[in-house]
Image (cartoon, one colour):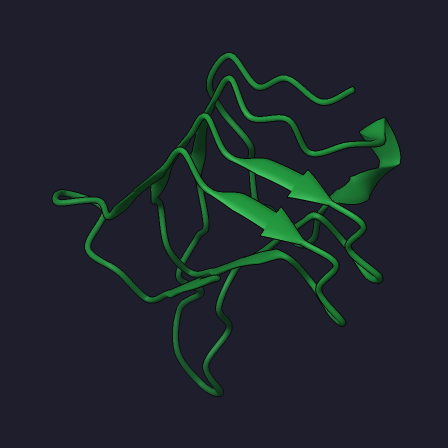
Length: 94
């Protein structure tokens, strides 16, 4: 599942998904601020959640600020954020 360069004023929402045994990242957020609610990730080979700012050449960075609500991302180390990206909301990772 990927969220790339969305409108922070009208965020996309992904809710109640089960993502199983993906080869790469289960959820990628790049320069977007989606609402991620009640999603479950199992057996992601890379990261359950990968978040990073979009940095176009010669222009200002587009920040990524996903709102996390009651997601189960598996292992606590399964979520990665790079650059100035921030995770917000009542996130749960076990």
